[in-house]
Image 1 (cartoon, helix red, strand yellow):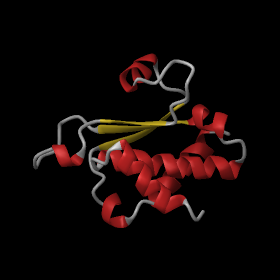
Image 2: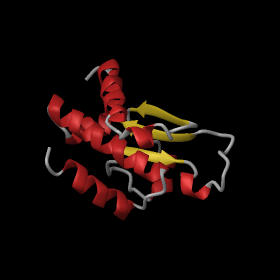
Image 3: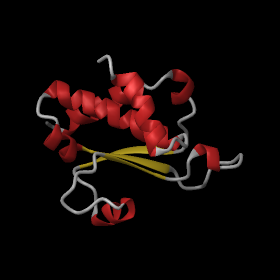
Image 4: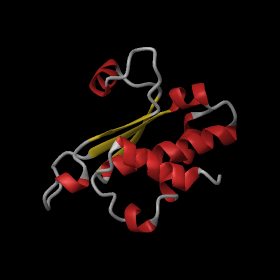
Length: 126
């Protein structure tokens, strides 16, 4: 998939975030990379050769104590990693939407378990 097509899918994924949360997404950079770096894999504990589809890096909103940090938080969506597990345009679209939702959940302070529970409720009927 061309990068501009993938960027559109990420934008669509962001637009599917409920307004009450999307309005609070401030000081967050959403970027697309092909694959995670060695440092990102090491930081998350993901083994080299395993797939990481997305990553939230920053200070969750619930831990900010009333002020935003100077540096923006960062959500990275890994295009080639997603393409390796989702083999059709529709599967890629769904994977991107789920991954964007997942990483935004971390931005708001949800644990991995809580994000997965919220995702199962949101995406189980699609």
